[in-house]
Length: 125
Image (cartoon, rainbow, N blue to C red):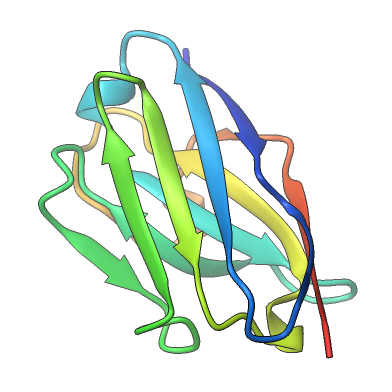
């Protein structure tokens, strides 16, 4: 079992930065791939970024590539999403997710077994 708690969301102006954190409890964290997803009002939940269990492999949605960076600290049981050059279209609830029994990253939300409660990110123009 893995419990996930996101933090770091908020209101920021376009062009600004935020860093999201996801604290995980549960012994399986270090062996599982992690991901970030987001959901805007009246839209489907979409992939943002993912990272392998070791942190050696990362992947990103085209819409955030070059602006967002995912990382993890397996000592602190925490995964991060550094978001730079934010745009109004990045406004959404951001969710942290963990795979179960797999260290390989995935862009499909159906591959993730555990989810956090979400944190709101609002980017004003």
